[in-house]
Amino acid sequence: MNRIFLVYEQIVKHYIERIDSHDLNQGDSIESEEDIAAAFSVSRGTVRKAMLELESMGYLTCSKGKRRTVAAAVGMSAEERYPMVSCRVALMLLNRSEYLEAILKAVQSCAATLGWDLNVYYNASEEAEQDCIAKIRQGNYDGAIVVPFRRRGELCTNNYVRLKESGIPYVMIGRPPESLMCDAVYADDYSGAYRITELLYKKKCRKVAYFYDSTMDSVVSRDRMKGYDDAALRHGQRELFRYDVRDPIFAARFGSFLEENYEKIGLNVYSNELFSVIRAVLHKYGKKKKQDYEMVAFFEHSFEDNARYTVMKVPKEVMAHRAVSLLNKRMLSDGGKSVVHEIFEVDLLDV
Image (cartoon, rainbow, N blue to C red; front, side):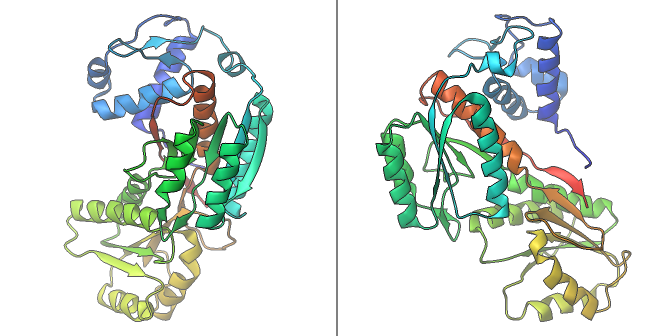
């Protein structure tokens, strides 16, 4: 795995090292966001993202109108920072899949460490989700982690308004709509698609196309498409090439693109699940060699392939761990009254 540390992660690592090395001690104030931004030559938004990460990890605390201070004593373990308290927690997932199995196992592992009484519910439909939330509201739970059901990418906001009204703190794994204020952990699909497109240009591709499946999550697809659009336009590509593999004339449209471009092309793919259908068209039109094309995709599911592709790994386990950390903080401190949105970038993985 080629691990790329993003700028905000470097800031997080910097302050953890300062706390662990006694350079900063419990109660010490840290620099202002403006000073940190200047020191790292980044925007305040990036700094704020790092600060929220450090707060969710228990290293920093922030009071309204005051500077952030070191919350954890030097050398304090994660168990000491978040003491084991018997909490009753609900985990709501969609039907079992490889993607959600990874989240389930990660949450179960963390729950066992923290001493949680964890109960799992499955919301395979809008009606099932409504029933699950009713059970959570009536089940005397201290908190919940939820992966929402989405119909063509849209979730039922009313279900989560009811959950919020119950006073139970919850963390959503997935991007919530703007109308719903809640704690959330999700992969930054826009940045991931932007980085994929950038990578393809670095691999000497003259033109880059984007491939998606219109039956998949429309919110995720929209963000990834926007990332592709912005990166392609930034590199001076005058025409955007977007292909829906569900389009009845997909093969003909993509084939026409291949016939018109003799130089190396880049393929930005929504999911590695689409590899086979794309490769079939590539081979039909004689694009079989590595010098003909580069394919980079979001890594959604395991696959066996003798060819070598680059994939952007969707960090399922990382998102699950962050969700547990954030919910634990909510249950032990403010009872879920604060609202913090956290975005986690994906990792690069060569397969």
